[in-house]
Amino acid sequence: MIVVEVENVGGLIGKHKFEFSEGLNEVVAPNAAGKTSLVKAILAMYAPNTIPLEQLLNIDADEGYIKIVIDSREFIRRFKRVNGRVLEVESKPVIVSDRLKYVILDPYLGEVARRVVTQANADITDYLVKVFRLDEYEKMRESLREELDKLKSEENLLLKDVEELKKVSEERQKYEELKKDLEEELKKLRAISIERVRGLQDRIATLNRRLGEVSKRIEDLEKPEGIIATTAKAIDDARADLERYETMVREFYAIHENPEEELAKIKGEIDRTDSLIKKLENERREYLVGQDARIPVVHLAKATKASACPVCGKPIENPEEFWSRREVEVEDEVMKSKESIVKDYEVRIANANEKLKELWKELESLQKKYNEVREIVDVKLPSLKRRIEELERAFEHYKDEVARLKNERGLIEKELEELRKQLTEEERVAADRRAELERRLGEVEQHIRDLEEKIAKRSEAGRKLTEVREKIEKTSKELENVEKELYETLSRISDEFSRIASEVIKELGFTWIKGVRLYKREEKDPTTGMLKRVFDIRVIRKFPSGREYEQPIEVLSTSERTALALIAVLVGYRLKIIEEYQGVAPIIADEALVAFDPRRFDKVVSELSKYGKYVIITRLAEPEKTPTLTVIHK
Image (cartoon, rainbow, N blue to C red):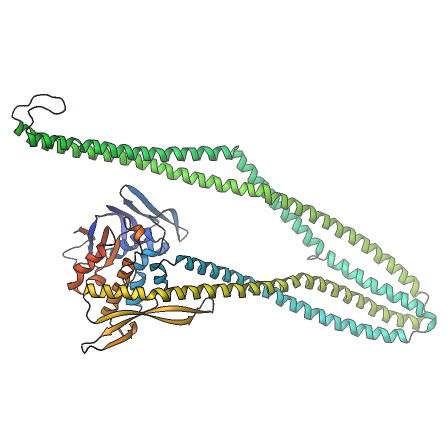
């Protein structure tokens, strides 16, 4: 038996419990009574990534859950609304697979039915991948697509750096041209210098150029957003991070003096609790078997009209009457005793399971914190300390450099003043002009050196960009090869799909459809921009005249597309798409997809029953006949 319990899921407000027995179960309800919500809840426990959390928790509820119990095994997903967002606070689905969503016969929740019936979309490529179990190709394809996305993101970031490099290079070019102009003007001034003062002017020019370089470097070091201020801020930030990490480590070890020992204790407690659950389950089973053993003894005594009790040997008067009465009493005693045993053990096992969940949470939480602390101690703290030492050394170096440059600037200015006194007024005017040009030239040359430093740093982005583009090309080619190999594999086995579809068509007695064909085509992938190969499902239609014609699904009526979706899903079942989940996963179908032709309903249900212990059919009912959601076992 599968028991489904929900609270505040979709349109099912409050707590609801539904029991599904082996065989056919009909979920009957009028519109807006919760049929779709129940199907979503079941699907969410078998294909967790299929239904968004926002669609599971009722819009007016703050918390809710879905619980499924299969042969005493409990699975649960619990939800809570926090700051307007729905979070999953407990997650233990029955299985984590997306196979089930493809074969649900529901025009909105079933992937194949939704595409074929509701959207008239013929592309069933990913369904074929699931049917023929080509998941390795799918994993490789997804992995390569993810890698390609990451590389393209990295490429975009590097392009920004390269664009910045281009701007810096353009600025450098402008300063190079300015430098050239200044040098040309200086060349003319030098040419007209008289021999007597040429030596003085050359020395003044050299000193002025150096003065420009020194002044520019001091400005770069001391300005508010300059090198010294930036380095000081980096030191403060690194020290704050160091203090934060050291506090985290202290606080952790203040609570957990010996985390290794604590983890070992929790693991030991988990093992003991797990053993207790198994022990309780075995005990329950043995007690139930022991209770059942009483009944055959009484049946045999009644059949043989035993004149003495087979257990204690006590003689019995009127055995026939005694054993008839005793048979009813024993059966009633056994039933009550079993109910009591089951109830008692259910409580004990549930408590143990709850304890086990809490232990696993505790273990996961502690292990996560311990791993973070070890990473801080072994990696982050040493790295930060080295970083602070490097920054402090750099800071002191920059301060020393400023002091040295200021001293040099003072000496240059003093020497320039002495040299200027040796010139006449006319020579001094010419020297001043030359000095101005030399100082400006020195500043320009220093700025060019700063720009060249930036270019050197960003030139690495250009090299990386080339590497990333080579990786993109390589990954794109790998993805293309995987797509091609997958396509070729599907091409080889598509005939098998068509052959089994013909068998299904024949068994269900469809006369208008002769067969199914998979049509191969190529289209551009909107994500990667590459050509991808897809398979569209088409029908080979048989007309009353005997003529056969291949038709795309766009021209089919809704009922014809419904039949096609049913055929495609049944092919998947025949190819054992969910064989490994046969004992736990129900087969779910909407009445609209199996009873659109009442003559075939029993055939379809019979076919579905071959592939699962539990078949659930949702059926629309009239409100006056069935006012609430009801499960009927047939």
